Amino acid sequence: MGRGLSLGLIVAAGLAASAASAGPRASRDLQGTWDLGSYTELERPAGVSHLVMTPAEAEAYEAPRRAMHGMPASKRGEVGQQESEWTDRGEGLARVKGEIRSSTIVDPPDGKLPYRPAVAALAGQPPSSGTSSAAGGLDNPEEMGGTTRCMATVAAGAPMLGAPDANVIQVMQTKDAVVILSEKYHDVRIVRLVATAAAAAASPRDPPSWLGSSVGWWEGDTLVVDTQGLRPGVIAKGQRVLVSGATRVTERFTRLSPHEIFYAFTVEDPALLTRPWRGEATIHPAKGPVFEYACHEGNYSMETMLAGARLAERETAAGK
Image (cartoon, rainbow, N blue to C red; front, side, top):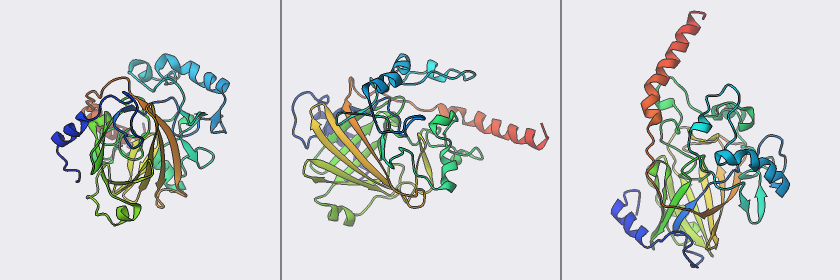
């Protein structure tokens, strides 16, 4: 079963999945509609050195963000994008195994992405700098960032991370596969199931793609998913996350209760990273179904963006 799985089969599998947490389920049952959202950023915010926050620290961080559903207010001189757009990042900082987390990254200990120096510039500036982190050039459409082109998002694929909007996913299972449908960009990831890690290592892979090729197996009550074969070249998924054709992501999904999936992952890429990095999150039941997510803003504005870049080049050449 590969990426050619028909939509009809996906829908048929989904009929077996009611809304998430509609009652007690077997621990190996991940089916349902879930939400990745929280106020917790991927990287640790400026001024916070520790992973676990106290309730008082959490309240001080959450309070100024509640009016905009988890986003900070725009700074003076900015266009007010955050005030004019709809965001939904849950109800506060992530609570993972009872701890209030300041970052999704748990390793390295400083909570920062461990990019090689030559690669760091591609990822843009860290969130604390106040500078846009959308990677991608403006020489041609193909160089523009994956999020601008509506081609890649941190809310879909591996690893799955919370975004400012459209954090809902739907999980469907058959005996041969686990299917993860992301609301954002409507990406469908098909995880082929095999018996063991050794079988996964020997399993044939699909051709390279934006979502890569995912193979999974059960270790007790934990679903382990190995994803390789991402699209060649460096892909910007948003939130300074870069992946390439050499990236390997190992995810672990553990159903802790009817209302909680513990999600842990490791990202490896010797070409981009000085060391692997690890993250942890809690996935909660969604409050509603998956809705249409029509992403074409970048496509519609691409001509203007490229034209603006050419104008800036001409003005620089003219000494303006």
